[in-house]
Length: 202
Ligand SMILES: Nc1ncnc2c1ncn2[C@@H]1O[C@H](COP(=O)(O)OP(=O)(O)O)[C@@H](O)[C@H]1O
Ligand SMILES: Cc1cn([C@H]2C[C@H](O)[C@@H](COP(=O)(O)OP(=O)(O)O)O2)c(=O)[nH]c1=O
Image 1 (tube, rainbow, N blue to C red):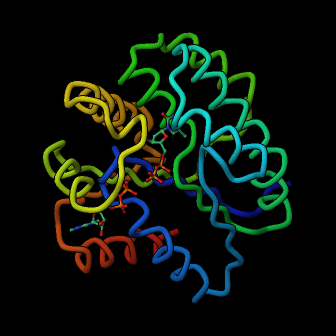
Image 2 (cartoon, rainbow, N blue to C red):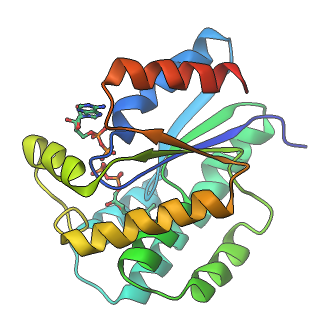
């Protein structure tokens, strides 16, 4: 029986997910909830090795999608399911919505193929809460340019991120019950206030 909750963070690169991850983990910690913070692709030694490949090597689109789900299969088996089963909460920096948004929306892999992989890899598991950090592309781009060296995805053009963001927003509409859209253009303290309210309501 599962008792822990599974929270995922999503958004286009530069939206501000990573900025808020530790804050939310801290809020749960204050309530005495044991939390596992993890990420995708990655979260296990094999997953991190796969992450290195998918983020830096050119490859066929379907190979990319399969590697994302291969890393996810391992992540679920080694980290997510055991943590939830022992009552910990899990916060993951990205999960399957990212595959629909990036490989599906951005790269145009068919939704049907992604749904087959989803049904295969986690037929009975979905996040309890998905926080979608949403900003216009120009804002995300300006934040990225100011901070870091860009990986394969971050070097994509504006129309790729427009399609990625649109698919995230479409899924937020389709799966309203678990999604919360966070307007990430606001100052960080305002976003923290909203996150406090959301977490208090869980
Ligand atoms: N609400 C915000 N206002 C201003 N800058 C922000 C905000 N959120 C994040 N940033 C900055 O934008 C950059 C990218 O944020 P990050 O959390 O790494 O994005 P992501 O994990 O979504 O790619 C960081 O330098 C971060 O400090
Ligand atoms: C989980 C996942 C991530 N990605 C991409 C989105 C990001 O550009 C990249 C890595 O995510 P992320 O950890 O957000 O990058 P960073 O540490 O640089 O903030 O992988 C996919 O394309 N599909 C997926 O299924």
